[in-house]
Length: 198
Image 1: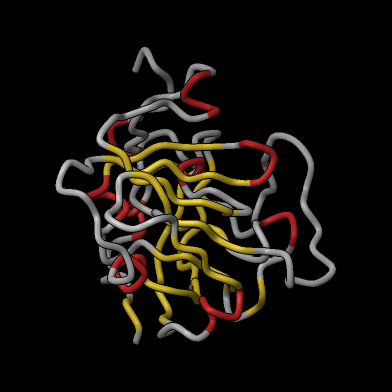
Image 2: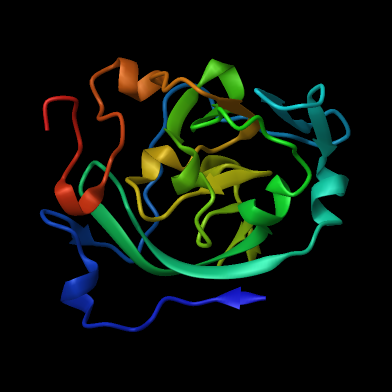
C-alpha cells in the first residue's frame, strides 16, 4: 500500500521560516544506539489499555502489513526535507492490536535512554503516521533511528521519535523531554509552534 502526497507548488509545502535541504541532518540528544543484532529489541504498547502490555519483537513488526508513505518533514531548527519515502507499519494497523480505554486522549512515545515525546492520539492515528524501518528504500541508519522510528510528518520532526521502544496510551497530556525543556507541547510547523511561548 502506498500513500503519496498530492503534488503542490513547492512553496506551498514549506512552512514559515523553513529552508529546504536535500541532505538529511542528524540532530539528537544523547548517544546513538547501535544494535548489532535485534534479538533483545522489542516495542512495548502499554498504559491505559484493557490488556497487560503488548510486546512486539522486530520480527513481529516485520510480519505486519508494510506500507510506503511519501511526505515532507520539517525540523524545528529550520530545515525541511521534501518527498521522503518511508517504509514501515501503519500506526492504524498497529493500533488494531490494542484495545484502548475510551479515556485515552494522548500518546507518549518512549525512546532509548529515557527520551520521550507527547502528542494527541488523533495525531498519532493519522493516515500518514508510520513506524518506519526504511527511508527512501534503504534501512534506517543508527543516526536516523534504526531499527524503528515514528514518523508523524504534520508536526515538527522532534515529535517523530527515533529509536522507539514504547508507546504509552494515556488520558493525560504529559510533556516529553524537549517539551520539559522549552519546546511547544504540540509543534505545528505551519503555526511555528517551536517553543512553549509561541
